[in-house]
Length: 183
Image (tube, rainbow, N blue to C red; front, side, top):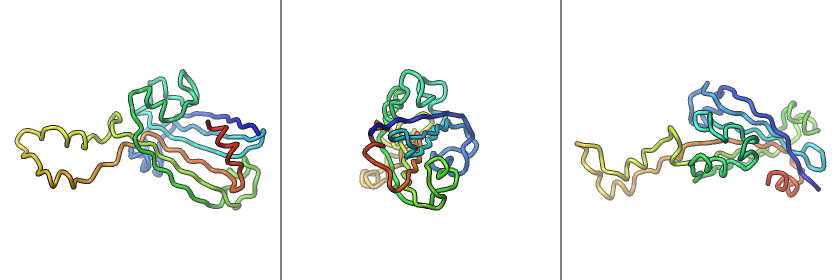
């Protein structure tokens, strides 16, 4: 078995769900890349990724599948622009396949598909929440330092989202071949 993929990237405005997931304002520009993975030439998985252009715009990694780091994956591409991915949240579920998905994947609308949603995060991203970094330094002038006990119980802030990816595949997809195609 052999796996391949094709992709297409476009700039668009973040809709409500993507804006919430990436913690950006609705309407901010994102790079959306759509993928079609094939196993032995047959469609086997769809994937869509969104990356805020406020982070990747005008960098060598703006287009995920083009340029010097094209096809290398989110972690390696972000490292190239001095952003360390230090958290990945993955949600796995199943739902009925939508008509447009099943048309491409070769199934019947409503048949069960496996859905994987993955969000990559970094504590030190441009425009990100750096509150945790500030808490480690000296307090601003005129503000008493927090007590050690309170500081140790302070909630950790979630890292800044860098990219979100949603993958959809029929429940019977060949996972080994898909893994090889993604590698």
